Length: 224
Image (cartoon, rainbow, N blue to C red; front, top):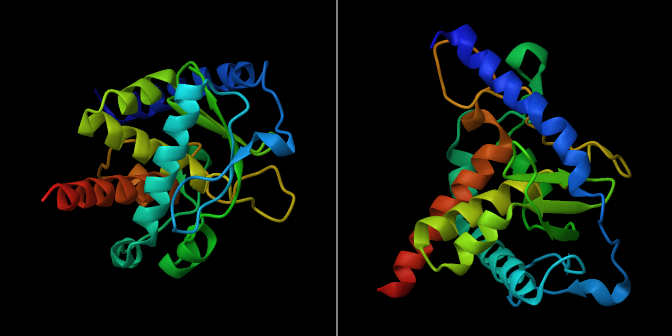
């Protein structure tokens, strides 16, 4: 496939995801004070609203969030973030790179994770997960939940990566804004020769990857 064809494919997937995102929240229940749960960890970690989840999925999101927070509390996480040469907060139209940010700017916004959110187990068409600042919510596909519950390490890593990615979208552009500071619309999945907005340069995708990779290393260490 030509580069133009690949870009057209990326655009078509992004466009398909747009109407489905609205449906994710059609039956969303807003949290009451009794909806909030604290992940079981000594690392700094936000409260999570579990009012839209089954008991099994509630236990899953709390366990995954706890492990993400512990992974980000590991000094190796900040070291890996600072080792990346380029960070992009977003993309511009035409798949062009957006605003550059420093590693320390990224860390100051996301570490430790502190923005509370409600979780939804849903299947948005064309997306594995979506974040909506209007609802202060993260919706993740049911496949990611069952993947974690399977106990298969590669599927569990996928859930960790996905939730860590979505948690970066919780940071607002400004106080009270419903627009995320770290966005990935108009991104290009695979690196190529053109100066475009590739996933590995974006805060959302690369933080998800770093957390997932370090989580896997930590799990290996715990088994030794």
